[in-house]
Structure formats: structure tokens, C-alpha cells
Length: 195
Image (cartoon, rainbow, N blue to C red; front, side, top):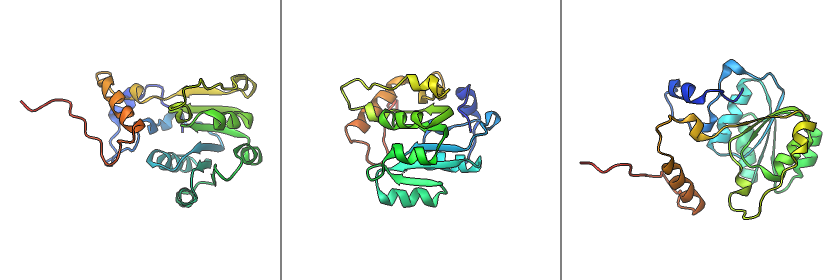
């Protein structure tokens, strides 16, 4: 599993026959990274897809969730280690299960630092950083760990993957609705009125 170098072209060619839960889950198997351990955070539709893609590539998946019911769900998908980060010390668990070779990052903050502390030649795919979205204070990362752990970091944003003519203002509207808790059900955005 690897981040895609030219996501725009690849994304436009994918025909799956079923909806893709997050456009930033697209990956290119021609650039597979042969690594062993993949930690990441969460149990939503994007996360469920990442677990299954990682298992397809025979990677050992470690993931955290925010509730015990989500722990059971992610275990059912085949993750190797699943833990509730509210009840388990992430640093201690990663120290025991590491070293970390590949990290799918959606959270950022202290969890990313914990991964870097327990990494070796790590590839990090960053598609979000939700720990800082509602935090007015700047988040300080331990950037020295990037070179100390020989890390390679890829940013994988949805706007990179979408076609170049996609209206960027729609992303602002969708993001705003999520932050205000208005994201119940399917979001409907009127792009143009019928003539």
C-alpha cells in the first residue's frame, strides 16, 4: 500500500462498482511498500477501508478507537491490535508492538509523536489532523523525530485527488458543516438551480 504520486489521474480511472467512503483512501498498488506494521486511528468508513487494504497487503494493523464497541468492530475487520485510546497508554502499546514502519495519520498531535517515537524507517501518510481542528493554540510536533527515525511523509489531501476543476468552495462548506455538527445524514449541496 502506498500513497499515490498522481492521484488525480488514478482516481479518475477507478471503477469499483461501490461507493468509496473517503476519496483520500485511494491507493496505488504499483507502488506497494513492503512493510510490516501499520498503526492508525479510528473506526469510521475510511478507517475500515484502510484496515482492509492493509490486510490485503498482509500488513500487521494496529489501530486505536474511542470506544470499546468500535474496538470490537475493527477487530472483526482483521486488525492485529485494536485498543481504546481513552483506556490504554498509546506510547506503551506502540513501544511493545513496534517498531512502526507505516503510519496512516488522520489525527496528528500526541498520537503522531508516539508513533514517531516508536518508528524505524517509517512512511507516514497524512490525510488529516483532527486533533488541531478546533484547537486555537498552535500544535507543536517533535520534528526532530522525522530525521531521527528516518521518516518519509506524504500529504494526501482530497483536493489533490479530485479533478482540477472541482470547486474548492464546496470543501469549505462541507468542512464547516462537520465542525458545527450539521453533518447528520447525507449532505446536500446545491451547485446550480434548474433553469
